Image 1 (cartoon, helix red, strand yellow):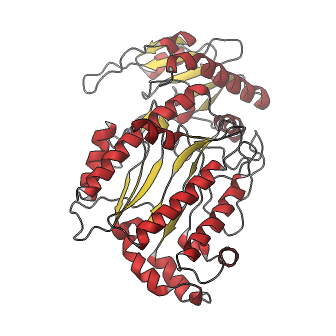
Image 2 (tube, rainbow, N blue to C red):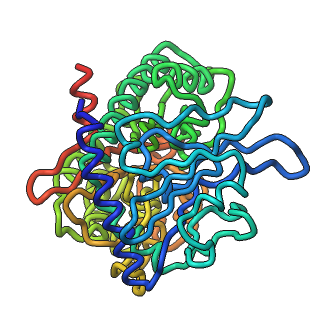
Image 3 (cartoon, rainbow, N blue to C red):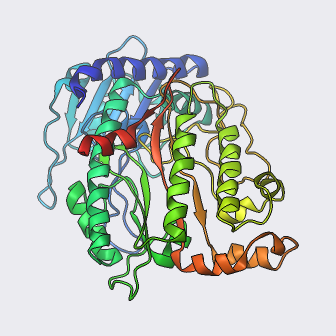
Length: 440
């Protein structure tokens, strides 16, 4: 694995440069970046699981505690205000440790009043970037769009430190996916597969980057199936798992599909995997990602035609919008500290222009031209979604598909295969496939 401590100084310097650029472009004297505060469920004293703001988290390798602040002012060493409240109801955060600490002037505080007193200037000079509801003394967040856009635009390009963490997150995720497949083959329920996944990843629900999608049979036709049945199905046909892992807040996002037996559905998985690897291999710096999404529709429509499901050409199916019945979501998105990472539609650094989505493709999450060290997901799929199939069947293009084949495939739900891929100036780096290969 990469040496995280070795990469951190250059990462810190890059984030400091981006913050100072945002302040310069937006005429800001100082930034206060907050981790956020603990929130509670409505009419309850039960806390919502805390997740630090990504604007804060990007600076700090391990620290993800509430009510912490980073002060950035030109010409000053960044200040970390670290909340360590006196508390016997909950674990008190441990002292910040690690090689990264030397890059900050660290001040440990017990409450918000003390936090304000540690600032190097009057609170009024700062622009505050923090989750809604966070307060520093008598001020809440400002969150102006333009400096945040500058920071988001830069975050799309990953530092060597971030890439190292994402490779580690991919290894954890790949190991857990292997355990999940074994649980499926052993006849476990969705709930049982989910538990096996978390055990292999050694990460709980609140540590994973997003809620696991564990879908057996027809549940795979629901793109974000959010439940886990406790009982296994009477007849196992298919398994779709969309699940990732985290390392110091950085995510992996991996999807695989499996067939219980040989047949048409299993053959389609193989064909979609071939399409997925073809698309992943085309990722390059300078590529129009929206164009790659449109290519995916052409390739997937050809899979359907060759399988005898489509009775028209792939080009015709795309032109008529029929391919979207079977592939209704976008090809993928940026990934990093957030699974659906930011800056994907920005036409410029300051966020003053937005790059539109292709007509007829409302769910694409990335339209920006790729640059070196961006990491994107490549996740084509084919689904047999009753609502969309019923619309096709009742419309003018009902004769373009073989409905007997469709009815055969409905109980299998669908197929999705997803890798995390880093763009370079030449061959892409497939973090996901490399992780599975490393496991042997």
